[in-house]
Image 1: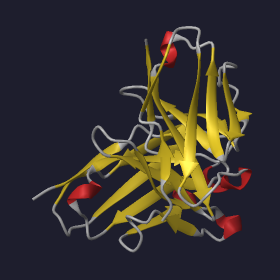
Image 2 (image 1 turned 90 degrees about the horizontal axis):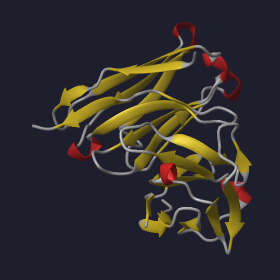
Image 3 (image 1 turned 90 degrees about the vertical axis):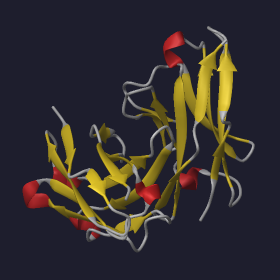
Length: 109
Length: 118
């Protein structure tokens, strides 16, 4: 089966911008993979931030955005806040089968 | 309020079986496809599988690591989702979450811990 790869860890400064990416072993990530992005904080259940590449839920802070970038799905955080320190997971669909990436731990400098 | 409450977790022996349940309330369960997601202690999320709704013939899909060993079913009259786990392995040890992930929804239970150990 496919393998979905994310950066294991990234750091960001308060107010800074960071981009997390999501790569597929089968080739370029496209809108047909319906990329989702989840945020999980310690001791909490995951929460979906982005669905179908770019769409936000009503609870998604405006500083988060989703896109396709260089053949990967991407989650960009602009104007990072300390409460954004968390693990982030991408989630791709492959003709019905769904796969999580390994997660990116986002920490603050 | 939407609630998903998992139950049935506990200790199982390698090679054994366990059946998890998920009781739903606060939304029209029968209209929702439902997923099982697990998380091993200190590890990332892993998609276990999904069952679609009646309109999609209750079709199912499974992750590669559980395919052929786990079976997802549902009873819409009881607003309940199930995960039958057979031929359990130590690597199946995890918190198991039921969830409704199809947009615009994002419903998760609090999870139930399954420990596979001799």
